[in-house]
Amino acid sequence: MKVDPSAFRLDCGATWLNLLATRGQAFGARSVERLPDPGRFAEWLDLCELAPVRPPDRHDLDRALLLRELLRPIALATVDGRPPDEDDVRGLAGYLAEEDPVDLSVDGRITRSAPPTAAAALGRVARQAVDHLTGPGRSDLKVCPEDDCRGVFVDTAGRRRWCPSPACASRGRVRALRARRAAEARTRKT
Image (cartoon, rainbow, N blue to C red):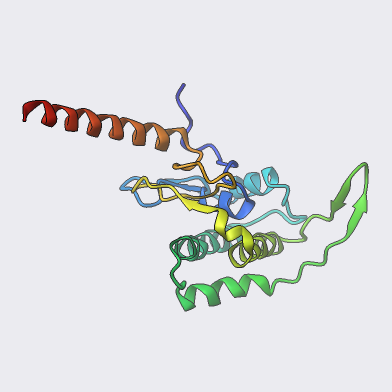
């Protein structure tokens, strides 16, 4: 079964991590941009239940891409136990200042009002990231070992090696099998 590379990844364990996954193979020679235009950004926001009252425009998309690329090195540093870049942290803090009044209601379940703008939606994503990166949940974050991916994901069980992408796990397993076979062949020759 072939996977559509432009399909959104919503399986990383948190909305902010799913934002990171909107750029596939981020460290590869041919990264995949899943948010190429405001329409796709609007679609992603809708899938994440963050569709704003006012549809996003090009400026909103640019801010989303900036937030994504601010969060990526901060997340990688956090997982690696290194301090993040101060400029990245200051950039992230700018998203937290967005005005976003939240009205809660009950309509069969508790619901919250839609963000008024894409900027407010991004503020919610940024707040979730900060809560995750500074709270106890940060110990559940892992990084995919595939060099072209390095996707950050939640692993509460502590048993996952690769991100949720089937491609990363498959490539990793094939590489491990080839390495084992090569080692066995070298052992037989000696």
